[in-house]
Every structure is written in C-alpha cells, then in structure tokens.
Image 1 (cartoon, rainbow, N blue to C red):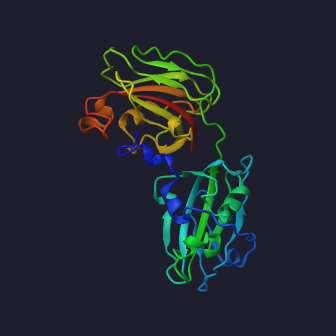
Image 2: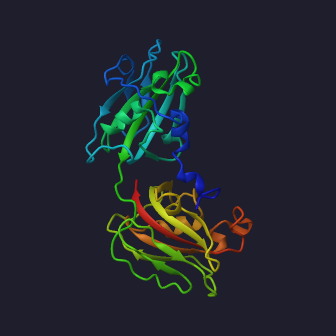
Length: 314
C-alpha cells in the first residue's frame, strides 16, 4: 500500500537497523556507567530530545532509564515495540544527529531481538510505555567483525521514547460476511491468518469499497496517526497475491495514514475505522497505483483487494 513498495515495511526499521548494526554484542555494561552519567538529556518524553555532550568521548557502553513510564509491562525478547528514537554520533566535536523518527513522520515498529545490541535491549526491558531511556553504544557492544565499522574515538547515543508495546497481532471478534460479490473471506479466529479469495468473473467495483468484517472496540483511526496493521493484498479476478504481512511470518507493520504516505484507497478507507477491526478494501486503479501499476504483478488496470487488520494506532 505504500506508493513505492510494501515489502520494505516487513524489515526492522531502516534507520534503527543502520544505526545499530546487524548483530547485537554481549556487553554487560551497568546502567550507571561513565558514559551515560557524562551526558545530559533534556526535553519531555515523546518529544524530540536534546543532548549535552562533554568533550571527552566515553567508549564504553552503558544505559540509563530516564523516565520508567507507566504503561503496563515492559518489552521482553521478541516483543514488538512502538518507539521514537533519536541517534547521535558522539565524537566530542560536532556530535551530529544521524537519525530521528521525530524528523521522519512518527514512531517506528521495532522487534526487540538479537539483531539489536544488548545495551539497547536492556533499556527496552526496563522501560514501559510513556517512558524514555538512553543507551550509549560503543565498540564493546558490537560483535568483533563489526567493531571496525565504528570510527575511532566515537560512540553512538540513542535516546528512545517507548510509545507502546502492542500485544495483539490480529483483529479478534465476531466476523461477518462483507457481502462483496466476487470476494470470499474465511476467518479462522484467534491470531490465525484469514483467507482472502478474489478468483471471480464478477466485474470489479468502479469505486472504493470498504466493508467491515470484524468491528473493533477501540477508538477510531484519525488522519495523521501511525497505524499498526496486518494485511493481505490480491488482484481482483485473478486471485494473485502481490503482498501480505501474513505470508511474511505474521508480523504487523506500521505506517502513517491519511497523509499521502500510502495509496489513496488506504487513506480513504481506513481513516475512521475503529482500532481492532478487520476491513475489506476493494480499490480501483485510480485510488491504487494508477495507470503505471506497480512492479511485475500489478497492472494499471488492476483493481486491488486488501484484507486489513487495524491492530493499533498511535
């Protein structure tokens, strides 16, 4: 549903992955290490932070929970976390900001696993929703084969605001038939993937169709929010699946809705939907990828059919 590609959203957010490296180290740094006590973070949680840096760079990893948060449990290994983060290259001179979700349109979905350095995982493990932590990632937090990639005399500083820790991975509740001729939906219940079938000789609708399959009990999605979704996308008439979060292991993805970051059919069809809902969207070409189509599978004349679970909104 992104204008350029759906598949890129299945990966760990690119800024976070690039800043962290691909593998976590096994550092056992304490939360009161010299590095974090040398730094001063200012600004409210869930707003872009400022960091005051001393001239001397500390090349030992450490972390500090700045605000513990109050939103339920903290993250465990394997948890999905919705977070804002700002990253600095601490070199004792320019100390440049290298990435920030506050400049990139909103929070990212991060999976807390071994691809993230342990010194960051420690912060996630002790910070609940609404909280903030800081991690200094030095060479000792990286595996030996990656330590040479960090410039000499430099450490990375992450200030992370935990927005939410979503537990649901699918819409749950009583399912109803969307009553769209030519489309069939099977809902197995629980967190199991639904089945969408679009093999039909029925003529595709000429306008956007949005039908509720499961009505959620959460607040309505607002334009400008970042929503967490599961989805499957097929082409009307052929039953060709061109993309699916379910087929990529069932991990939800996140994107901003109602602001032109995704195709028009998603912006128009998902704003106003209650969180926790499963929605069927039939999207004509002019509200999809237009006359140019997308990739090898989607032609400029194709009507797209999506089954979307709105898991959370932030």
